[in-house]
Amino acid sequence: MTNIQGVVLAVAVVATMGASAQQRTAADGIAEYRKMLEDGNPAELSEAKGEALWKQKRGPKNASMEACDLGKGPGKVKGVFVELPRHFADTGKVQDLESRLLSCMSMLQGFDAAEIAKTPFGRGEQANIEGLVAWISAESRGLKFNLPQSHPEEKKMAELGKRAFFYRAGPYDFSCASCHGEAGKRIRLQDLPDLTQNPGDGIGFAAWPAYRVSSGDLWSMQRRLNDCYRQQRFPFPGYASDVTVALGTYMGVNAKGAVSIAPAIKR
Amino acid sequence: MQMKKTCVPRVAVTAGVFLLAGCASVAPAPDYNAEMAAMMKASFRDQGIAKVDRLQQDASNAECSAAEGKALSEARSRAIEVANLATVKLPVDGKFIGDWREGEKLAQNGRGMTWSDASAATTANGGNCYNCHQISKAEISYGTIGPSLYNYGKLRGVSDPASPVSKPIVEYTWGKLYNAKAYNACSGMPRFGHAGMLDEAQLKHLMALLLDPKSPVNQ
Image (cartoon, rainbow over all chains, first blue to last red; front, side, top):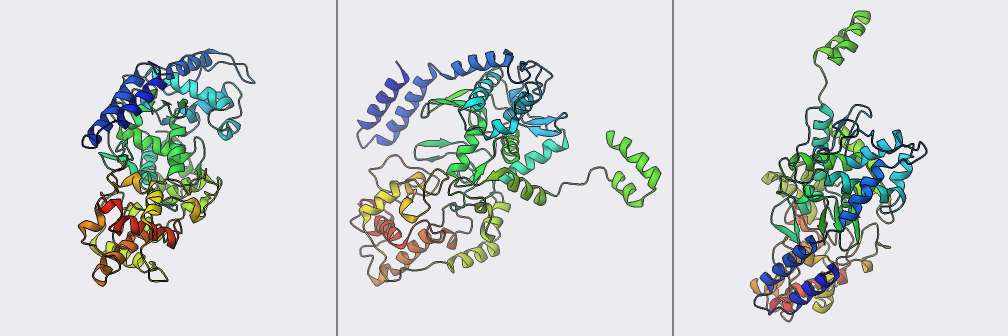
């Protein structure tokens, strides 16, 4: 069964429910739909693309990414994802996967990091980063989150991330905590993970990057955070900006011990 | 250890008391308030109608943010509620109840105020109500961040919203929609009237959805 057929079936199942059992069966229908989606996750295509991109000589310096240090030494990819964001001595900064990839693309391949950061999601080099994050995260699938917190900058980013998480502003007075500060809540029928603690294996921070069925492409954590801020009615967070890395650090530290299923599949 | 290397020779050269003191105390604790302000300023930019001035917090948001999800003291909660209650403007014509059908449309509409919305005008905004609340029985796709509002008027004994006996609950409900922080200091609900997101006519339609005995909410 294709995903589209699955959606149609799930919607039909939900739509034909009797009023008495509506509540339970609506949730059941959605769970069934999600199960069907797991049969074939299109993120696999992004993973294959990402692996090829990692090894391919590209950019003004015609170099591959194979000398990129994602935290466990140059070229080491297995297990790095569940320990990011972390501090990097060469940049002197705490970096998440995407800000680190920007550094490597700039240092090794000669790409203009600022130009890539300005590029809309899904276009140009941003589309290539989607592939890279899909593959790199997949190389940590099944591992538990365990962010390092020994460097003072890593501790600082976790604290700043916590403050950013609770920072209420904008026309709606929303913060991240408005939706993700309590367990067992939902928006419409969408379950919301409580990100102030470990929400469980493969939930919340441990599920992104993910293939979005609704938009038909792979969303990185940066893109997920960007759309959260849009719906929070905030101004636009810069790609790989400090606030996004701080939030990643806070959520990643909170997710300690959670098993990563990234890249997951989402509605 | 790296710190010692850079510190010691400078102390030897200058014999500065302040430098020495600086070394002995290792790294000073970060000034998180300053770091946070600098980070937010550097991280965001204008996009469409969503400008960086939205990051400015009023006193209520600043205090509720700093609490990081914990309850404020009774006294501070009360002070915030009093300040917010003072912003509530009752309808100029004294009429509180509009058309529940229009209210239902607004409750369903989750649009407005994002950087991808073209206009911040009230006509472009929905109430976002079902995102967080159960309201009518017919709509099963509702959120649970806020309490259920099903049978809102009926449970409160409102059989005629225009009657004097209904006045306290009618005015409370108006105040809640206009500025939710007037009754709950760190409420998660947007301040629809106070923030200029919904106009008086729209608020009246939402009032009707909640309080009109003919509204599906009260069946």
